[in-house]
Amino acid sequence: MAAEHTETTPASEAAPDDDGGVFGTLGAAAIDLALGGRDLYSVFVRTLYYSFRGKREPRAMALQMYEIGNKSLFFLTCTMGFIGMILVYQSGLQAKRVVPDFTLLGATYLELLVRDLAASLGALMLATRVGAGIAAEIGSMVVTEQVDALRMCAADPIDFLLVPRFKASIVMTLMLIVWAGAIAFCSGAVTAYVAFDVPFATFFNAKLVDVGDVTIGLTKCIAYGAAIPIVSGYCGLSTFGGSEGVGWATTRAVVNTSLAIIMLNFFISAAGFIIFPG
Amino acid sequence: MPVSAQNPKPPAFVAPPVTPGKRGIQFIDIKKSFGPKAVLHGVSFEVKEGEVFFIIGASGVGKSVLIKHLVGLLYPDSGEIWLDGEEVSKFDEVRMGPVRKKCAMVFQHSTLFDSLTCVENIALPLRKHKNMTQKEALEEGKRFLVRVHMQDFADKYPTELGDGMRKRVAIARALSLDPRYVLFDEPTTSLDPVSARRVDRLIHELSDSTGVTSIVVSHDLTSIFSIAQRIVMLYKGHVKMLGTQDDFQRCEDGVVHQFIRGHATGPMEM
Image (cartoon, rainbow over the protein chains, first blue to last red):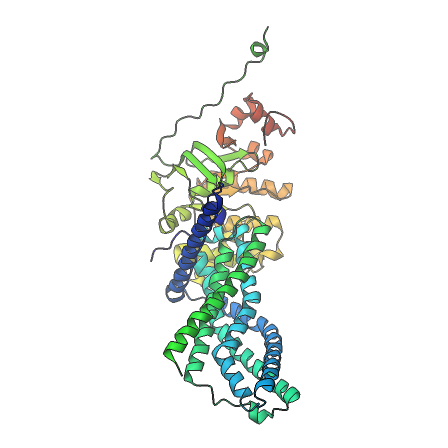
């Protein structure tokens, strides 16, 4: 596969600058969006290509696994622990009003966690920490010409910078989300016991979780793990200008990665309901 | 007597015509804009093999932009760039590979990779361009560090070094591929005078001993008037003057005169 030209199209160059009224502005925004989508797709395809065909760099991948995984562990444990408590407390209050029966509180909560919440909420948390970090690092490399220097060394920035992060993110997002889900469930169990006197034996109930839930949950983990470095790496590579540009790239990375996670959640959930209707 | 007769305005510099297809580098009518801002309005000149060629001009005039076109880090809006008889300005990333092997570049801020040690920084292009193994590339990298007197810092990370040392490692990285052309983007900026003169000496030796062609973007008047064999001055996106050190010293054009004397006031518009 021929490597393509790595320059991404800055919005300011792509959009016409003259005053064309509302239609002109909308048209410029549409062109901007289409060009951005094309560039993002190109980054994704090339990342996949180099993931399978490029040289393996185990040291770079191990370093990224540590950066993405180990360094996010405490943050994710705290946030998902509190989210678990909030979710069970609010669900318990609602259940108390409608059907004052908590026997299925744990089972329903676990199904929801496995199918959706653990992956989606965990990935949104990761997007803020990991996505921002990737965009800032790559963006700084762009503005200090390190990415140009990579190209001069015949090292494709996608292969050198994105592929180790892509592989590490898929592995570590999966592991972190399984861990974060377990934390959210345990913190929920403690909340249910303290607030609603639900015994642990009743709460720890997995009878509503089936193969479909696990498959959908794992699919989401992998999809989010892939989306975070791709979207944030693309934002980093399209950095334009100096330190202000890096700031904007970081902001765009967090916003776009969160958006990508929510959109992927919708499509994977919809596909899941079709494939596993039960 | 009218004023114009007392101080006749020197004729505008007319750049010699550039013929493509020869050895060396030919820039022909290069135009480049960034959005609405036009930077290069049609720049043409030739760099001959083996010479130390300086590109000078005020900040923002497009000197760095121009040399980045040669190695495909930027693409011109129009115009042609010829390298050793080949038109390279429309090459894609794959075809640019051999061009980048032939034309190394030393960037303004060294651009060493912080996650790699000095010797690993030099080994990277050797692995990628020459398909060496990591072990072979590291051995070769150490050899190039000796050449810039940095062998004692092989296992240090760039963040542990000063600006001058980083610049020397960056030069070693550029030389590691045995290029025929080396592009230096403000190589003495941010260096102390001693380090700056050492870099000058290195560029001079490179040309003298190995016949490498050096294209140097610089504002450093000491460098310009000590090692430059030919100089081109860019002004407002055009070639203002092209010639040897002596030509520049003798030039009566107000803008050229102001620039090479470093005067704060004069006809030059920034």
